[in-house]
Image (cartoon, rainbow, N blue to C red; front, top):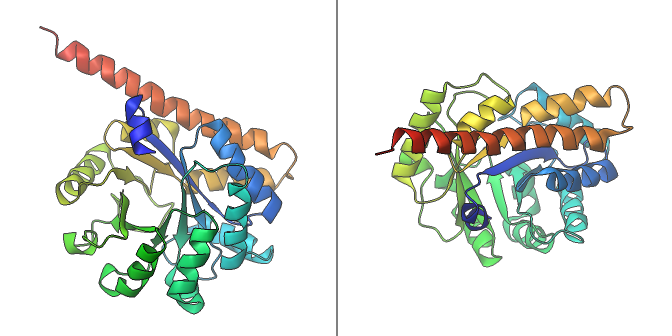
Amino acid sequence: MFARLSRTSRKAFVTYTVACDPDFDASLARMHAFVASGIDMIEIGHPFSDPILDGLAIQAANRRALAAGGNLERTFALCAAFRETDSETPLVLMGYANPIAAMGYQSFAAGAAEAGIDALIAGDFPLREAKPLLDALAEHGLKMILMAAPTLDEADFTSDHPAVGGFLYCIPVVGPTGGPSASTEAIADSVERCRAASPLPVMVGFGIKTPDKAAAVGQIADGVIVASAMIESFAAYLENGKEGFLDFVGNEVQAYRQAIDNGLRIGSRRYKASHRD
């Protein structure tokens, strides 16, 4: 995906959704609407009762998904259904260690691979404890995405294990998802730290709440992750019923996509103007 985008000088735009929020069929339709509207990669959360990394918006999404019967197995089924018509869009499973450990690392990795999942983010699974899981992921051709937060040392988000890869998830702020935004300067510093530590592409998430902010981040990193802001908008829309929600999702995605792409073009023009002979 990163190679394909680089050929057209574009940055990756990624969003997150909880599987089965508000139900299985609507969740599947929403994933396809994401791609049709300009999303390059989808992070798919497996519903969990104690999402400690997440703020109020994603906590509420998890509760809606659990009420609809969502769990890790249903998440696999949702990804498999998505793969029936989309074999290209990367799917990154994002969640927590407890359901993975309960399923068993080998069973989890085999099930994820069979469902068409490409990689895993486990927010409460320290790298120093992850070797048995990493070994299982490597056996089944999956990657583990590591998170680089300001509170972590470099050893906590770098590894030469063959299952570590994909990209580095840069978190420029301290706190849960949906929290305050970092300044552009702080984001730039965080991205620079990540680039110095790892050769992987750097994606920035946490606190990206507006198209303008996404455009600014696109100037700095290899891609932008927008999660809580879009889930909050979606939840507000659901309060008035689900009619027309796919158009709503598409319009919101396109607003961010256009801002990121336009910001890159503006930035390129400014760079060229400042470097004229």
